[in-house]
Image (cartoon, rainbow, N blue to C red; front, side):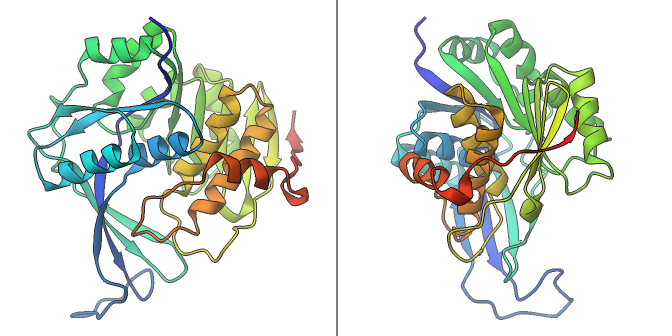
Length: 311
């Protein structure tokens, strides 16, 4: 079968209800008057990665479980309106949803509805196998039931990436994803020793590249045992929301990786895309276009400056 897809995204389709609050953590009060209002829109981790790589010119396909509910309608409409092929698998539990509290500085607190998942949910093996056979790469979101699709992806021979988000390096739920991927993203937020966790992933799993994002401190890149620091990129506008920044980073990195760029340049692409995402209001699902990313990467302050940390 010919390659029809550059990036197959598995999982992470859902809906967020965005609530802007005066501060985080939010002190207890009987009620708050908030501005702007409460907005519900499609866009969780898999949606953002699919949107991000598609905006960067990569042929994209997304598959996940969704419900026959209003939230599912929003997810289907988002993919249809953006021209992103979407294979939906019916979920009797409904479409994933969350409430995001967003503070004035762009920080957010997500409250996920854990009732929208059933242990019996699966992505059909035959469907995953057929989609993988037509894809160059698969990005797997750590939502149930994507872990069960990992063996099928490995058998297909497609390369795999995943984002562990704010993993603490201990929770066993994340391990199947961490150890089965060729390219692993995670955040330093909950890590006591980021370097130790990165090296542990590489030592025990398949990953040749591990990337740990650290917000304003940039990112750390482990490639074949060598650890480098990648400086942060200044956002092109005021920071209004950090939601989706990690997914944008992964999208930018994947663009470079699939085009054979040096890992440091891939990380620079990711940093540029992530910085842009922080300037997009949480009420919108938007992504940086390819031409804008490449133009920003060509600017003097966006030249790769990987500084070795450890060999």
